[in-house]
Length: 216
Image (tube, rainbow, N blue to C red; front, top):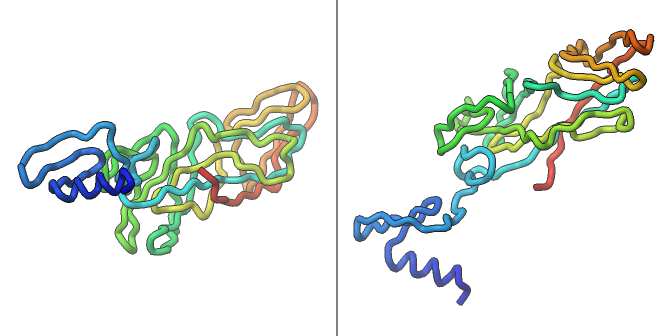
């Protein structure tokens, strides 16, 4: 008999109910701690502890753009991601934009811990959450243009992004002079400026995006 099967049989025999590593002996009224904890609920992972019972999906945001005289273009420090979201439980797509910041956390009501965004679906009332994965942030470079490239990834629990609004907070680096442009603001998904050192225009044109599901 496999070890897990024997353990499950013993747990049932002694009335042990395991909840995230805590064994509650209901028949005896005593509480014992099982260490190391058993990953019984899939909201126990390295990011958010929200949304018990929802499978985590990793979603990547990809950019495609034409860069003029730029070596790189990326989300700047304290960047705010503006997203429209879809509930993965009932399929409801929200019409409002939600701001998501990697350094901002909200407490979860449906479980312990916190997430960058905690939201309750207006249709099915399910609590969902989303986290920015800081280590996934990479610049979009001249070598990438005009292909699609994943520039950030999100850990999604019960919700997935369906639209992104590119506003401000980007940073760009000139290819020839190395001049840095901070707080780049896009209008109609484009931006242009002038590099005084290199005496030439720089810009981001025809920026488009898409979301892709990534492997864990």
